[in-house]
Image 1 (cartoon, rainbow, N blue to C red):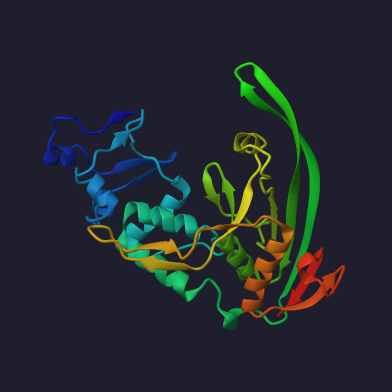
Image 2: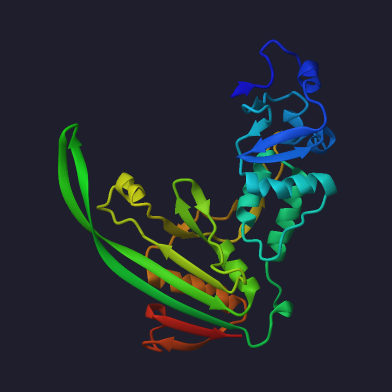
Length: 298
């Protein structure tokens, strides 16, 4: 990739090197828009990029290249066009959108995201009566063999047990599943990833994760393509000094879900707060945190 601006060019020549329409390559997704749209908020990162204050790159086809999430950028671009944050029904990547808006430093968009987060994704008044939540959980133990490198040509065969945890969740209230997708996320080498409903009707989610045992090295854990599950607390705003705008940060660091008991505890915390009550527990109704099947109604 080549730098869009030559080293000895000045700000005016940088800004004049672009003309409408502008083609963008954002993480592999191609967008076409105007300079007026991109510079609508000149104190933003995009405003700085397209007024020559920050150097930019071009891909091999001449598109301005931005190494960010391309799919979520469509909502950012539409906000720049209309000053309205229009998200599809069941949108489950608010955390990712929030992170991208923070990177681009678009203050009105961050304010709108903060407003929606503070209002909460659900409204109890809109919840259907008789909503049902059914959860099936399972834990399978598998023996993993791997080579531990001791020296350039010295490997030691090691063995450890890993727990494959799965939770299949069905809910007649689709909005509640959206809340769970916001609450839980996978921890991967590419960063946090929100789970997605497993069918187009958004009534089912299947979670599968593997807590890393201490005896399993991180590189071997990643080699097996295992991923952890984390839960984040509610979000708050914090004002940074200087030229940076208000950003949204978690009140605490994401907490890893290390066992099924911890998952059920977090699930109950969320569901009971939204008006559900426990209807049945299997196998032992007196030991809800160690259940295999859990049914809640609202």
